[in-house]
Image (cartoon, rainbow, N blue to C red; front, side, top):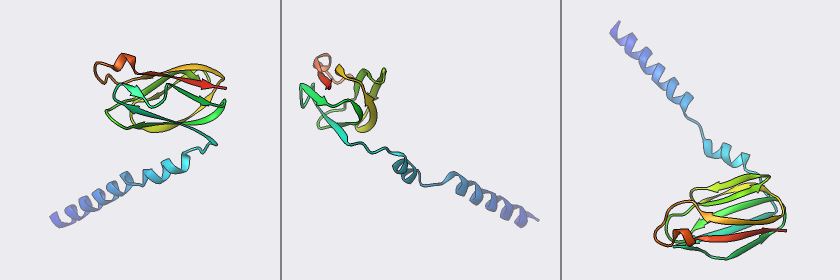
Length: 123
């Protein structure tokens, strides 16, 4: 009797683990939207690689690369009135409206953090 109970419990755990598993990376890749435009923002200690980034309006991939230090970015109200926030290296797709937007570092990174800004110009 004890053996049957252990076999049933073992089977239950195998089924539970199988249900919890999955390959989320395949799902995430299939959901990514490809765009024709990409703006790459490289963050270094206390500055970005450019003072100004220029992109056309419309759907654009915004990519953040941390070249030194740990940084994130916030671009206020650029995505159809919503903020773009990347709190780590990575990318996101946004629908950009024409205008000028301030890019700021979202992660306190030391004494030069408050000066870590750039401009995104959407034409």
